[in-house]
Length: 225
Image (cartoon, rainbow, N blue to C red; front, side):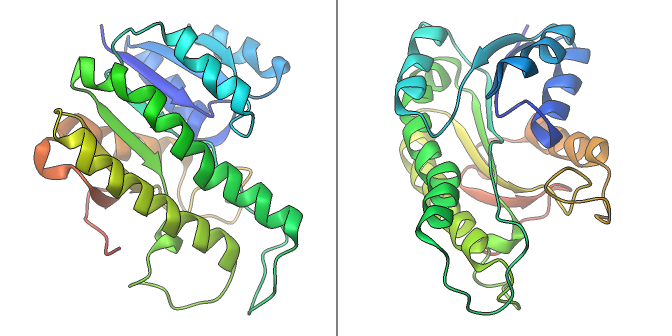
């Protein structure tokens, strides 16, 4: 039985990852920010860990929860954006900047070193949820530029991790999940969350060393950084 760790499983894409992997018989460890979210994850059969990814103490405690056990797949799904969406070169407030960058960038930089021993032990896979909006080469709009900057930084974090962890047999990938109908994506988005997650799962299942350090669409196509 494979062990799948989903960071940020309370809702949306993270919850769907937990649901689909649990339905397929994986041992799922799911983190949630609020105590009220634990029940629905336990109903899936997941082991739950309360974790706010902006809390350094909570992140440090994750190592204790894992207790050195192998993790076959770690998915970093936790992420935030600012609403309403900004257009143009609108300077972010200090609080908005800290909120987005701490959640989308600093948290993965703190989590990945903690997860590394468990991933190396299993020669597992690491998937981070990025966005096509983080691609510098594909950028054609200034909309939500704070979110864009955070996902570009996350891509660099993933790429750096792939260099070190790839040498130990871990496959590290950044994913664009598509524009998904979730609380973040909104009801007008064009992809159902089940289809997005199913697509990413197919890519993850087939991934090998050649996928390490790649930025991928949920359907498997490689994206430009």
